[in-house]
Image 1 (cartoon, one colour):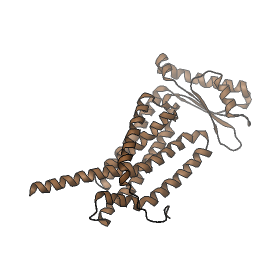
Image 2 (image 1 turned 120 degrees about the vertical axis):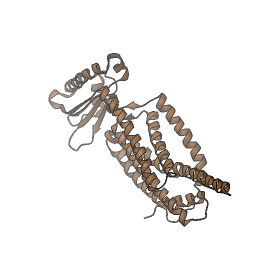
Image 3 (image 1 turned 90 degrees about the vertical axis):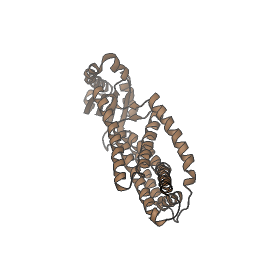
Image 4 (image 1 turned 180 degrees about the vertical axis):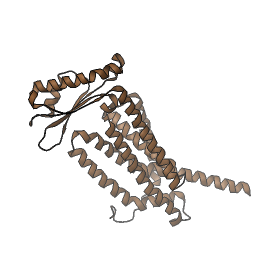
Length: 321
């Protein structure tokens, strides 16, 4: 099955320099946002209380939000689960960094069970004590949140290192830097957009970033494999021509895979519950940038390294004469 009916002859190499400039500016802007504005961390990383409660049919998210909001707790979030014949809500009350600094991490952890009790009592007052079913209560202290934050970052770094080693083993070292830099580009782009729109960073978002990493490197490997074959198929042509032909050869497959995956994830984002929307949004952004970076980030770096290696070989041969 082909996404494009005929062989394409797009001049991708022509647009690689403008794309590199655009990506460089975007990454700088994303890093500035990340280090100045920071992230809106979820309970997984900031600490706090998450409750799942069942309420009478007909109770809306807005009514639950109003009831819990009257407690004046910091950073309360309410979302509905899409469960047939059940009216289940997720209620999150995040820990605040200024609170941690004021009372200490240990003191805040001791207060978390009290917050859960307050929420339960308020729901009972509003909707009736016998009509509130507490399905689960999860407490995450600030120290645990910091530890999870560190482990999430390490998971991303380890995945990049593993990808670098894998591509070096399967191809050669000139292919690896482009793939890893493209992967870093995708992760930073998603993180920067989440910082910009103030979307919550949770463990599900970290899982999405790791999924994006796998998706992006798979896309990159397909094109790199075709470039390796192109050195034989298009023997005698310049490296730029070989890369351009290889991208065109795999373009239909790349677009078909990206388009079908994007449509499925878009359906999850539009029709799924609020619980998984951050995960789906991360994937949507990552799929777009993963496809883009495969063509316009990894391949220009490979061209540069290949030309550098060729120039060194020519200089070495000239020196031996």
